[in-house]
Length: 167
Image (cartoon, rainbow, N blue to C red; front, side, top):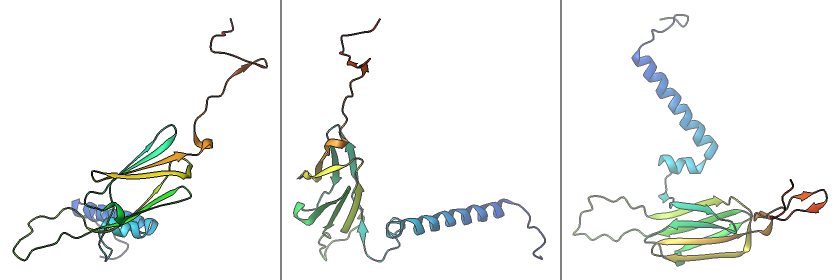
């Protein structure tokens, strides 16, 4: 078949084209996200994992809940640089006995690193972290500028109270 001839359209051609588009999408993700994409696709040589988090913005602070069962609190490094919170640590491998056979091992072990951008500016002097029942709770106070505030509406140069209503 010469290059000027068109290939017949069929289910196989459509499947190959769909596969090519999916591969292109994966490559775009790998290029744009770098090492994080390699981890997601399981292509990096070293073993790493990422703990599950909940990021909750409240009126006065930001709460980060991190699932870290089996990780000693002393093995977790929590740092805040600007508005980026970074967690690093390691969950140790489970010791194996020569007399046992592991049939299923779904809990990840090894090193982890997770960077979480804060949804609002936070005060680096007002951060607390507490580990309880396998969950690390990090509370970061918002800066005063990031907290919502009520703005009174003025009428003709005078401030209106809640009870005054213009008729």
